[in-house]
Each structure stands twice: as C-alpha cells, then as structure tokens.
Image (cartoon, rainbow, N blue to C red):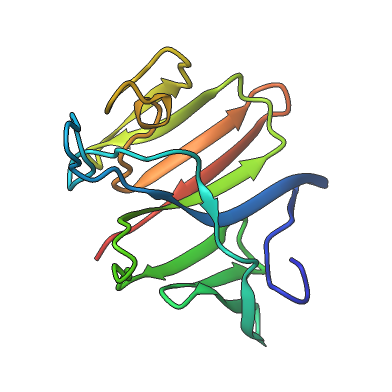
Length: 180
C-alpha cells in the first residue's frame, strides 16, 4: 500500500507479486432529456461518456492491532473506505460507504469501484447471478445497451461476488461483497 494515501498497489501471494489497483470512479448518468430514449435508474445503467476519477484517496488513519492491519481512506465527501488485511488470511477486506450522493450540481452519478490487475484473463470474468450461482462473463465490444452504449453493455449487477482468473499462473482474485 502507498504509505501516504493507503492506496492498494500490489498483492503478494504464493511468493509472487501482482499489480492490483483499486479506485472509485463515477459516470455521469444520462437523464431523461428532450428526445432522449433511455435514462439511468434503478435497473438501468446509462452512463454519459467516460468514467471520471475521484482524487487520490486521503489517508485518514492507519492502525495495527495484533494480526489485523486497517487503513481508513476518503475519496470524496461522500466516498469513504476501510481496508483490512489479516496476517493469517489470504484475502483483503474492503468496506466502503457511498452517500449521500450530492445532486446540487444537477448531475446524476453512477459510482463504481474499479479493480485493475496484471492477470491475463482474455476479457473473461465471473459474477454471481442473483447471489446464488456463478456465471462466466466475457467483455464484448459489440454488446450495447442504453442508447447503444458499449459501457453499459459490459456491466453486470453484483449481488455478492465476482472474480477473475489467470489460468496460466494458477491465480484467482475474488471480490466478495456482502450487503446488510
């Protein structure tokens, strides 16, 4: 982790170090405009253009209590995160809070949590389907939804988990989310 921001930079497992970056970004949401076909909503991800970066995370605190290492970060006034690692475990816990999302600027925001790694996946990833079974997905440059948008055609709702796999290196990276 970066000592100044707490940002994740890499992960070492089984003696191998791999790039692993995590960031929050947002898309401006398409609103129902005059002549518009679709807009973003509860069940419709309709981004307007490319993802916008939040500033680098601000490190709020960092502490170690026995085998637990915890970092608290703030990406904006309404995006905060706690990252925990455990010396005896081979996973990283991300606990984030988003909201309330400001709307004073009259811009809807679709907040995303992006993970980037150097795994060779050939565009293949796995997500849960309604929190039960796992479904193989593949990035498809021809998949278009919401006003013929490739971005929305390659996003999937994740209820409890997602993962990528690099079969050549025998590596899995799991992202598990729990909603309470």
